Amino acid sequence: MGEKKDNAKDILLKIIKENNLEILKIDCWNEDGDCCKCFKKEYPNEICKYNACNAKYYTSLEQLDFLYDDSSCVPELYGTVYCIDANTKSPVWLTRECNDVISYWTVNRIPEFYHHV
Image (spheres, one colour):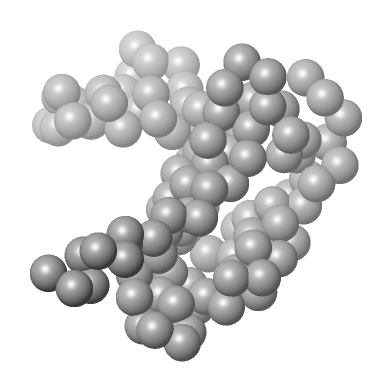
């Protein structure tokens, strides 16, 4: 794992500002949170007592005020940030993508041709 040098809140705020977005909802979690979400979907009435997970869920910018290595696929941050474009009022969502080499935030927009259907 790389050196923790990036602040999750600052990185998201930079993307928000560069793309002129407004945050509607933050739905992020750590790797254990993903595991626990799957368990809860399969067994909604059960307590996750056998799963040794340390789930952390992030629903506000203040909760995302921590350091991590944004360029590597670390299990510290996954999820979606739902936004709206400040100019067009179109929905936009940010997702954290990861491949074998690097991780990054992707800005997802509804394709232009949908606006003309």
